[in-house]
Image (cartoon, rainbow, N blue to C red; front, side):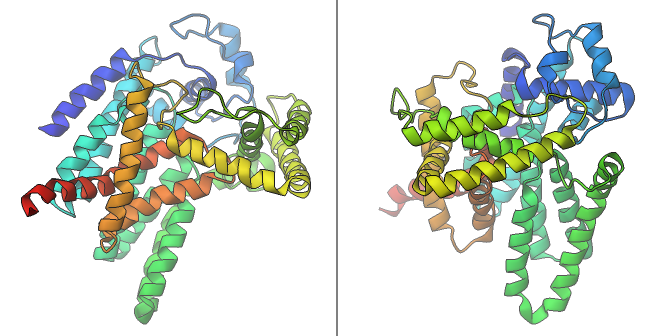
Length: 435
């Protein structure tokens, strides 16, 4: 019953909240269109130049479409999310209603994600499962993210599915369950290359804990790895054909690092309780000049994303070396500030993407969720149903901290935080009865 109500609320919000398709969303829309028309993947490197909407209905002029369709295939970003959109639009059609169709599909998927979180939380108790669903319903970004063409709703589903599959494998280890974990990891890498390192680290811990039966567990881990490799193999083969070298994931990774450095010094997002961010220091201005020089010197081509990869990799190495040599304390303080801001900010998929919900309400909900989760992790520290989901959120923070700590990147992991938060709330509800 609760899931049915959640379904109605999220589908309604997906229809009512209709943000413009810009920046990353425009690129995903464009690359999904190309997949539909040609069966070939290319993310527009400079999509503002040739995928510019002609009006509020997001129509695109004929010249822009032709340029997109004839562009050289690339590996600038992972193709999982554009493929997800293309699969939906293959059935429903690529027309003026495509954006609403995609939003509704993401709303439906988010309810499946909620069901997976309930399955995880119910392992603790029925009450914890129901409370976790309530928290999922009350946190505004979980509902509003479905209106945006970004990877977060799909990635949240795969993250929750991975958690369920991994726990099932730990409890009843079989080759089939290990293969399922590897399959989900592979699919997750096609969307965003984030989950693999967590699985590797978690499995190393599992092997250590079961070292008395190491051969059996190592064989299971090998099946898991093989399944993930088989899922990723087509992408690696494609990149080798394109570039005469294997590009493990997207070629835009170094661009993200550059953006992280830039945000540290030029976009000092104010803390929620402050009107203005910290003023730029002389060190900030020096670093900003280095970053701007790197950005200005990037090759202006939509054909060779590998040239961009090489250029930005060199720029990241050069800038990082200069910054660390000249301002070592600044690197730690600036990045620490970025991580703190990204954690304390409501995990919306875009700045201001709160669908009319007052910022103060969203911020309080976010702060309560994190505080309750911390308490719940402590209370449930002996239960793997609590620790494994919580470790995924901690891993997400650690993974993105040196690259680009951005609040939307944590959103796919926050539904799992509801489990620990539900454990804390359940304990609080029992206090009056105990007295």
